[in-house]
Length: 151
Image 1 (tube, rainbow, N blue to C red):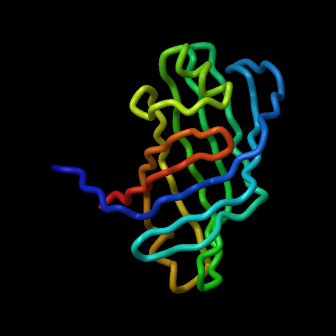
Image 2 (cartoon, rainbow, N blue to C red):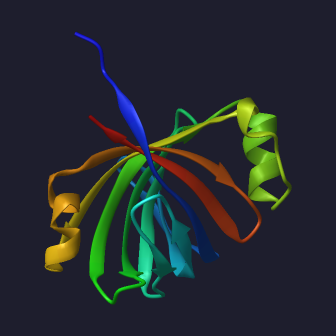
């Protein structure tokens, strides 16, 4: 059986500064605010709403365990909850450059998420049954995500 994908949307998510919550049993707990942004795809477009956050764990093995929760407002007014969980990892020098806010070629590190959606908007109800894979890129104050629906 073959897994197939279909392009869903590109997201440009504006992010705030990192807040360290300190060491916990699984690693350093961190929070990164989601300050807004935009998204666009063949079937939907709109804005990323401020107020979400990425609740991260910086694990001792160098993996950043991501748990982002935020909302989208589609151009027709429908609201969509996004749950995006995944990993970012790479060579220590690449991760250090990202931490300094430097732009790094995305091929030099792994940054993938699994995305699920929830909405009460009838015209977007198909998202309630959609699972997407996000291939992401970290910029200084932004995360760029290309999301592909699993078919």
